Structure formats: structure tokens, C-alpha cells
Amino acid sequence: MPEIIFLIRDLHFGGGGERVTVNLSNYFVDKGFEVTIVTLAIPGKENIFSVDQRIRIDYLNADIGKGFSLFQKVKSLFAVKKYFSLRDKPGIVLGIGTYPNLLLSLVSPKNNLVRVGCLHCSFSSLDSRWRFLGKAFFHRLDALVSLTEVDVPYWRTMNRKILVIPNAVSFFPETAALLSNKVILSVGRIDYSKGFDLLLKVFKRFSQMNEEWSLRIIGDGPLKGRLKKEILKNAMGERVEIVPPTSAVLKHYLDASVFVSTSRTEGFPMVLLEAQACGLPVVSFNCKTGPAEIIHHGSDGFLVEPYDVNKMSESLLELCSDIDKRRFLGNNGRENAKNYLAGKIGKQWEGLFSEL
Image (tube, rainbow, N blue to C red; front, side, top):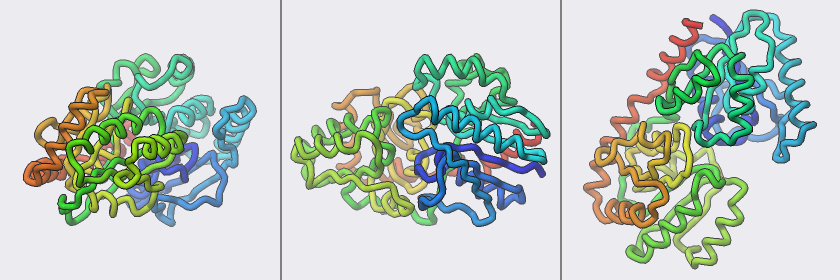
């Protein structure tokens, strides 16, 4: 069996890409593969996600940091090239995310090193700079893996070998949420793309029609301070709370009764799958990619036109007023999530490895 190597920016960041890395790593090591996670970051931080002890973690101490300075980029490139130049056995390297994929495309494919770029964002979310770099360098990779069918024609302009493999759900609890607690949940990085500013507008309107339910946001990010100020400004402090990323996120899913996403852009939103696995009805803006490949409108959740704050608040009000509707959508969502269990998605990856 070839060694499976994951190249990732920061294993400890706690986002969707990191969660996918850990999920796949744990799956492959259980299947008898030798697995290594190579991270640009420095050691010492606590892992939010549980990494199997059989998995090796190599730290390159070359995180590009928040400033994205030229020095940091050059440092990370040399660190990655040096790491793989010292390898003396074959392996399959999976780049997780746009920047790791760029670094991986610049690594020499020596010693039967197969390089696969795993795309964890939508094509539409890339700015012109990253589209240019992708077209200039991603063709050097042995394959690209897209999360959605929608983006395949766009990624094919960067690499002719393109496959679609969605993310696997992180967990599937034995019992679902009771759906009786008056808590609306949202989970994600607090940045512009996730649209938490829009969520506050939605909840403000919702609160004018419902005085009982509260909103819980689990996440961190560059706009967290601004979000807190907006909560105070609108006197929503008693009904809206922000919880830091936690390894106990499953408990929060099971404690909630509705899940909401107001993202402006998505790749393949893991949080929607996780919510469905816990039996939560989900409501999401139907951004260009992601939600529509998970949610079947009216069957296991609701899709709302992007930025339609009024319609989103009405959808939440409908669910929060009808526990039977919540149970119907939640039960169907749990069945849908079974299609994304690690065993099923893992077999798709194993098929790709055999082909490569």
C-alpha cells in the first residue's frame, strides 16, 4: 500500500479542511494505510479534532501567517520542497486547500510521488489572482478533486484529470436531537464568506415575531469583534451567543432544534451534513455551489434565495412554530446524511488511489 500524505496549512485551525483531513486520515489508517499529515504550522497547539495516534504529524514551522508576506510565502515553498525532496519512498500526497495545492504543484514528482489537489472552496469564490495561479500551475498535479459537480467545468480549465468526491460526514450519533430546545444553531468561521452579518439581520427580523428562541453561533474569525458589536448595538445580547470552536461541537448540534446557514459562498458545507446527521432540519441560502447538492428543498430542509433576509426569517419562523415539521425534515435529513458516511466516501478515495 502507498503511504497517504496530507499537506495542509494549519492542522489546528479547526475549519472544514482540517476536519476533512482528520476524518480521512483516521479512515485510511484504519484501513491499513500508513498516514502522515504535513502541516505548515508550528507544534504546540491543541487539536480540536481527534487524530488517531497511529498517524504521524510533521510540522514544517513555515505557516504563511495572516500577512501573506512574500518572505513567508517563499519560506513555506522552500520548506515544502525540502520536505518532499528528502523522501525516499513512493506515496500519494493530497493537498488540502488552495494554497497547499499551489505549493504541491511546485514539488517535483520524484520517487513515484503522486500529487492530488483537493479543492475545498467553490470556483466562484476565487479571486482573479488565484484563478491565474491555478491555470498556471495546477496542470502539473496528477489530478484535481472537486467537491461538487457544478464546479467541474471550471476546474477542468486548470487540470484535465478532474474527479468529484464529496466530503464525508464527521459523525453520525446513535440518537438524534430531540428538537424540543428552542435553540437555532449556526457553525462556521466568522468571516465575510460565511455571512454571519446577514444571519444577525435574519434573526433580528425573526425576533420581532418570536420572543422565545435563541441563536447560538459556534466559530471564530476576523469579523468576530464586529459581530459582537452588532449584537450589542441591536440589543440581542440575551438571545444571541458566540461560542468558540470546540471539540464538543456534537453536543451543541444535539442541543439545538434548527440549523441555519447564511453563507455567501461555499464549497461543500460540512456543517449542513453534520446537522443532518444529528437529525436537525436545515435552512440555507442557496449560494452558487454546495447547499443544493446536500439539501432537498421541502424534504430534508429549506433552500432560500441568497440574501433574502425576509424569506429566511419566515422559514425559521415556520420551523420554530411546528415541531412536526422539524421532525419530518430532520428524519429525512438523517437518512440523507447516511449517503456521506466515511465508509462510502472512503471507497471513492480508494478507487482513485487504485487508478493513480
